Length: 255
Image (cartoon, rainbow, N blue to C red; front, side, top):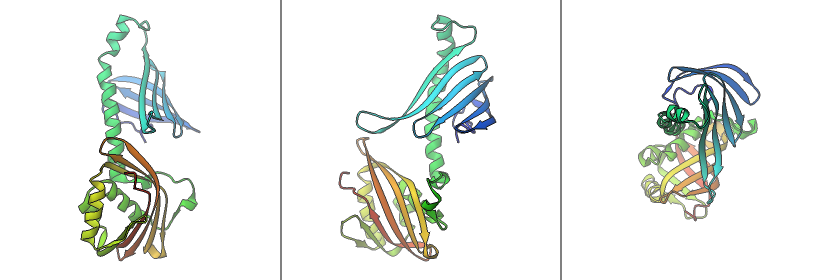
C-alpha cells in the first residue's frame, strides 16, 4: 500500500504515481518537497522493501527492513543512503544539503508507523491476502470485526459483541459465564498488556454464520515493552448477531 500510494504515509510527499509494475517490483514517479524523483520499489516478502532512486537529482536507496533484536522481538529498520547530483560524497556541502532533511525522514518513519496502525484499526486484516483459498470460507467479516475490537483493548467495544449469557473459555482454564464475568476476565488479562495484535492466518464462517473459526498469530506486548508470540485458534459460536460462546486455544501462561 505504501509503495503504491505513499501520500498517507509520508506527509512531505506531494505526488506518487505508479508508472510500471512487474513481478516483485514497481516503478513510481514521486514529488518530494517539490523535487521530482523516480523510484524502483523492490519487494522481498517478509524481509525488506527497497526504494531505489533511478532518476532525479537525488540518487541512492532507502530500505525498510523487517528483523529481530537480540531478544527475538520484531523490529522495523529504516535505512537511508542518498547522494545529491553535483555534490561530492562526504563533503561539507553534501552534509549541509542533507542535514535539514534528517528531520523530514525521521518524521516519515513516525508517520509510516502511525498510518500502518491506523489502517489496521480502520480497515482490518481482512485486507491482507491469505496464503490459500482454503484458509477462508463464508462471510468472515464478523470474525475480523471481533479481532479488530479485541486488538483495540477497549472492553466496552469488545463486550458489545457478546450476549448477556456469553460463555468464555481460555485454554485449560475454567470457563466463565455472563458478560460481566467476561468483562472482568478479559480486563484482568489486558491489565498485563500494553498492546495486542491478531494476525489472521485463516478464517472460516460456517453453518450460515453461526460458527466461526479464527486461526491467528497473536502478538502480545507486555507492560515492560517485550513481546510474546503465540499461535492461537478461537472458536466463536453466535446467537443471532452476537457471540454466545468463545473458546480461545492459546498458551497465555507466560504473559
